Amino acid sequence: MKTLRYFLIAAALLLSLPLAGQKAEYLGQLCGENHRQKGSSYQGMDVCGKLLVSLQDRGVATVYRLSGKDYRMLGQFHLASYDEVNHSNVLSFGCEKYDGGDPLPLAYISQCHKKTYNGLKDILFVERIAPDFKSSSLVQIIRYDDRNGDFGYALQWVIDQKNRLLYGYGNTVNNTDPANRHRVIKFRLPAFEEGSTVVLTPEDALENYLIEDVSGFSFNPIGQGLYVWKDKLYMPTGVGKPGKPSILYVWDLVHKSMEVVDLTRCTAGELEDISRYRGHFIVQSQEGLFVLKSLKASKK
Image 1 (cartoon, rainbow, N blue to C red):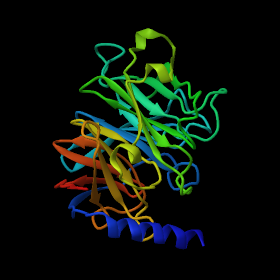
Image 2 (image 1 turned 180 degrees about the horizontal axis):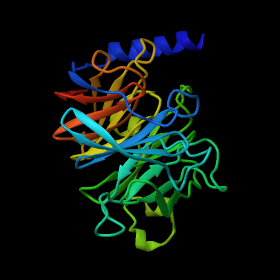
Image 3 (image 1 turned 90 degrees about the vertical axis):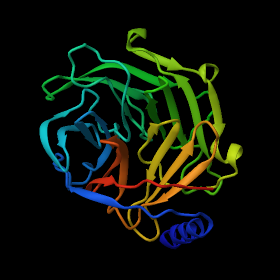
C-alpha cells in the first residue's frame, strides 16, 4: 500500500509540473568505505576548485582530485563528528579557512538525524579538513533553538557563499504526512571565531517561511542534498524509480518561485547531493557521479 501511495503521489506530481529534459555525463563510481554495506550510504558532497569531498552516513569522508572526466582519491578518514547519529546528509563549504594555507575552507556538515548527538538535534558540524586529507577537527557546532517547533523529522543546512548566509531547510512534519510543508529559514553565517557553540534563535532569523505559503507550490519529496548558487536553492531528490522519480527542485530564494528539472533519464540511483564543477552541476548518487550538461529548468 505504501508503494502504491508513493506511486500515485509521484504520478500526480509529474502530471502537474512542466519538466525540462536534461542530459548528463556519468563519471563513474566512488571509492567509499564499505559503501555497499548497510549504514555506509553516500550522503553529502561538495566541490572546491578541483577538490571534491564525498561523505557517507556516520561521517566517513573521501577526498578526490578532479581532472576533467577523471578523478583520483587523495585521502579517506572519519570526521571528528563521526557517530552513529551523524547522517552527514549535506556538505557545504563555507567562506573561511581555519588557516590561510589550508587547501579547503571550513566544511559544514548537516547531522540531519531523528536522534540526538550529545543531547542536541539537527546540529551543524563545522570541521577543518587537514591539509593531508587524513583527518579533520571539529571547530564549531551550530544549532537552531527550535522552541516554536518549526521543523519536524530533520533539519538540513546549506551555505550561501556569495552572500555569507546560512539557510536551514526541512519538513514541518515528515515526507509521508499529507499535512507536511517545507520551511526555509535564513541567518547570517556565524564566523568560527564566535565560539565553539553557536545557538541560533527564531529572533536571529532574517527570513522564516513555508515554501507552500509564499508560492502556492505543492511538493513532498524526501529531503536529500542542498546547494545555493546565484540566489537559488538546488534540491536533488528521488531514488531513480518510477514511484520516486529523480527530480531536481530549484527554489528561487529572492522571487520565491519553484522550477523543476527532470533527471529521471540521465541519472541512476538515489540522488544525494549537488555542487558545481567547471561551470556545470555535479550530482552525487548511490551509483556515482553525474555531471549535468545542460541545466534548463521550467518555471512553474
